[in-house]
Length: 142
Image (cartoon, rainbow, N blue to C red; front, side, top):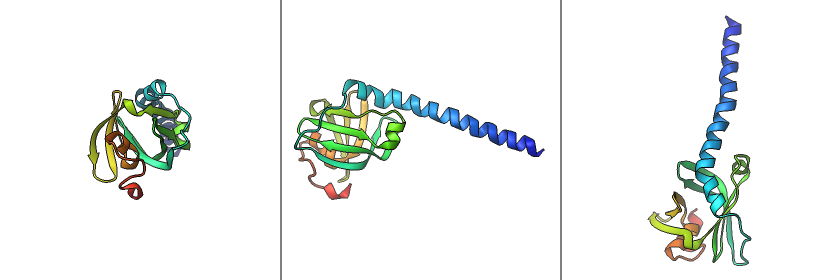
């Protein structure tokens, strides 16, 4: 009886170790990877403003406190923190011309479209798509 329980627990743990990474890889490859393919990382401009551990929602991926963000006059730079890099997320540099403002979500967050993906993130960064300045209103709220 006891060995059956151990076997069942071992099978559940093994399934989790296989299935969960496969699901994560599928979500990353369907949402983040197309952005990274289309907008590969670029060098940060001298005027870049950077904040680490920012929260984003990209499509169905909720990336709480896992994206380092830099903005300059040419690009929105999304740089995955260590956990994101372990999930094979690559850095993305989206030119501002490709960022379409959708709506503001209060003082802290804004929603934009980048290609086919809806992106919700900190207003201090995404606000540039709405004509704000980097680190403008609400910068300390994020």
